[in-house]
Each structure stands twice: as structure tokens, then as C-alpha cells.
Image (cartoon, rainbow, N blue to C red):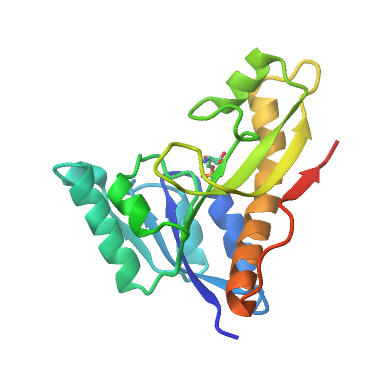
Amino acid sequence: MARLKVGVLISGRGSNLQALLDACADPAFPAEIALVISNVADASGLERAEKAGVPTVVINHKDFSGREAFDAKLDEALRAHGIELVCLAGFMRLLTDGFVEGWRGKMINIHPSLLPSFKGLHTHRQALAAGVKLHGCTVHYVTPALDDGPIIAQGAVPVLEGDTEGTLAGRVLAVEHQIYPLALKIIAGVKATGSTPGATLINPTV
Ligand code: GRF
């Protein structure tokens, strides 16, 4: 079975990258991480990739005159490595519409809220301020609009009395690490078999 070649874009600690690396360590998993790109040279996620024997590239956005030039370099690196699917995993740069269109249907992201609620930054702060009792995370296809695009999988957690941004973030992150590999498995499996996915996954831990 040919495994789907995945490129992961990171900017920081890379705990979601680690979850994907761990899933792909199983030879029966239908995808492999073939490249990790960081826009930050000292992102600790790079060490995780190196430990797993995955090639890494640093493309520092500060070295480019603008977003188009930076995105063109990303695109070049991804295509040079034969990447078939891009996973954004804590990648903290806005991508140009041109780049997003070029990877339409082939780029997914994990966002720490139950979309369409709480787009953008500080999602746990937003959830606490709104007083929701259920929060979580979403894996979705990337489209030009921020944190929009078809939903592939969601995981839910309760918001508990006395929660802080930190405690809530930790509870959500544990579920992120479950649903990102699950979403990748669905996409890679669909590509391998040509079948269409079933229902969107809900993973309530309440
Ligand atoms: C995660 O919370 C993810 O949902 C968001 O950025 C964070 C990245 O964390 N997009 P990590 O680098 O994967 O640990």
C-alpha cells in the first residue's frame, strides 16, 4: 500500500506533530510524514521530527520581502518532496489565497475550538468569556477564510468550574492529539480506497 506523503508546517513545540509522527510510526498507518517545515529556526518541534528521522526545513518568513515570496518558497519545498497533503500544526503564519488555492482539498488544520465558534487566537479565553459548557477542537480543510472550511473531525471536552485558560487548554490539547491522527487516517484511507468518508467524527469525552 502506498502511503500518503504528508508535509507538516509548524512554528513551535509541535505536540500535534508528535501525535502525527507517533501514528505514522505504525507501518499499517496509511500516511507517512515526509517533511516538516518550520518558519522558526529554534522551534522545538524540529527536534521531534529529527528524532523520528523525518527531513526538516527551516523557512524563516523574516528572510522574505513579503507573504507571496515566503509562500512560494514553502510551495517549492513541499512539491520538491512530493508532498500530497499538508497538515498545519501550530503554524502561526497567515497563508496567501494563492497558496491556499494551490493546495485546496490537500491542506488541513487543527484549531483549538469547536468551529465555527471561537475563530482566531486565544480560543480558550474566548470560550471562558462566553461561558460555554462544552469546548473542544476541530480538524478542517483550509480555505482562504480564516478557520473556515469543511470540518473533518471534532473532539469535545467539558468546561469545568474553576477552569483557567491553562487547565482548559490542557484538556483540549489531549483531545487534539487524538483527533488529528484520526482525521489524517480518514483522509489517507479515503485516498487509498477511493471511497467517500462517512460521518464527521464527534468524540465527546463528557
Ligand atoms: C494547538 O493548540 C493547535 O490547535 C493550534 O496551535 C497549537 C499548537 O500546539 N493550532 P503544538 O505546537 O502542536 O503543541
